[in-house]
Amino acid sequence: MIKVEAAQKAFGGTTVLEGVDLTVQPGEVVSILGASGSGKSTLIRCINGLEKLDAGRITVDDFDVSKPKELAEARKRSGTVFQLFNLYPHMTALQNVTLAPIEVLKRPRAEAEDEGRALLASVGLADRADAYPAQLSGGQRQRVGICRALAMQPRYLLLDEITSALDPEMTAEVLSILAKLAKQGTTMLFVTHEIEFARGISDRIVFLDKGRLVVDLPAEQFFAGDGGRTNPRVAQFLSKMRPN
Image (tube, rainbow, N blue to C red; front, side, top):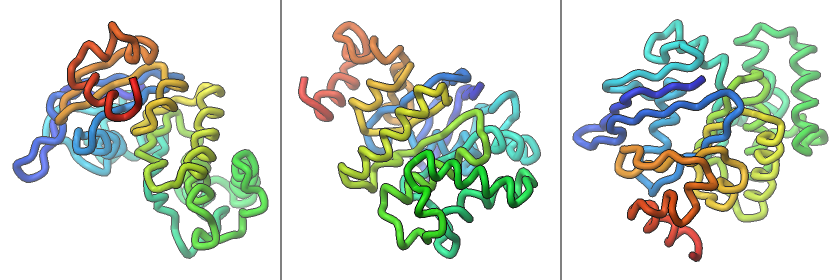
């Protein structure tokens, strides 16, 4: 499981995470909600080791991400999809998907490419394997990013606002892929502003406010009148995101 214990992080004089505790069990889909600047993306970046905590501890399957050797093992167990795709522009879709399995997991190239093509086909990109990122739409690039993460056969997917740079049609494309993964039992920690989507696929909703985790509830209870909405900050947030 992913376990965050008393996580503290500040940039300059600004506290971004303040004593966050969170556990994600295998098979769970957990969505992180909150206003911009609440610490959502920073939490994801700390889990995958792109940022270091100032205090506290994060483990992925008991591997401490603050320790370089253990971080390498943790990263083999978790795949991250970023909001701005982060694909290598000089590599084709297939090369982006197969790079890590070949270089990190030392998979035979032919085997990695067969699996990479199968992944691309599963998200409707079988005919775009040899296309470069500049030749793909935003939705297609994000789907390649998801395939790249899945190619490492991770136990956990970390998804950071992956639809924020997409138009509504492309957003729908990507969300349909995530819904399919959720039904297959893929473990996901999902930072999003897509409220209705989070409501539909999540087992739990956690809400961050100014770096603090203020609500952690089953999804159905979070959106109920006697659940998350009893927290004034959550009620205010939801009222702005969608009609009552």
